[in-house]
Length: 293
Ligand code: PEP
Ligand code: MN
Image 1 (spheres, rainbow, N blue to C red):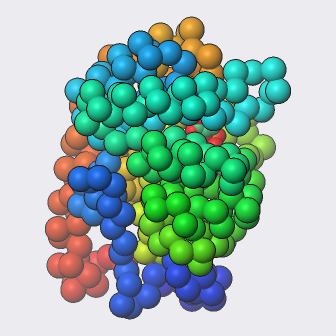
Image 2 (cartoon, rainbow, N blue to C red; image 1 turned 90 degrees about the vertical axis):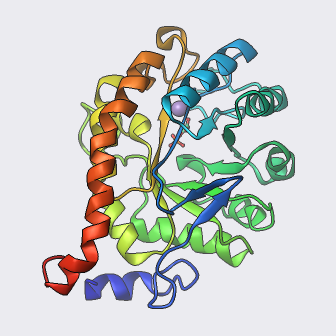
């Protein structure tokens, strides 16, 4: 490992990779995140109606997603934007889980909501705006659910791992890291997907790492390419926005895929996942030959 990284990250002892702890697998119902499977989470930015969520859940399940995403409590940049359905949204999510068997990931914004959301969610999502909300991170230590921790839009990887350490220190080792794009001087995309973050995090931490191509891109046409890139650099999965009618979405319609776009993306991703799988199998031989690090 790069000696600089060792000094930089080893202080986060509960999340840093060591000789004896090189990989964590986070169990979510019957799924393993960080294991051998590439796990795709998909669904709308926000839960809007029962019909919208059910249709989306069925479509993404059929296309191969294993986890349904959907915000019931939405952190919006504008105070005038749709703020989410709250507890009614959580109930719709749990009915969609019953109907499809998909696990549920949904965002929690305040420590006051942790207990309620944990009753419905299989994974608690911490959004980019909350990555350094320490009261929330500490409350998630005792929630009994895995946490999907998104990288703050201006956070370094060191700061992301520091927040993961806070959750682990509070008693919850089941943290999934998420690269979702960071703010740079580039304005053609909503954020800049820091693709190098994936192999860096996989090198310095034992935690699973997934990529959110939707919030990174900000436009749907880029989402499949960024997803393929994530698969090739070794991400453990994706979280992708999908909507039955993106132009009518109450949030993030520009970056949401239609059902057929999502199906095509999943099909086109498969050869890249196969490639990654065979690279994993050959890695020990390459290492023995001194051909990979
Ligand atoms: C979301 O997942 O809809 C979301 C708000 O993501 P982020 O926190 O990455 O902006
Ligand atoms: Mn969104």
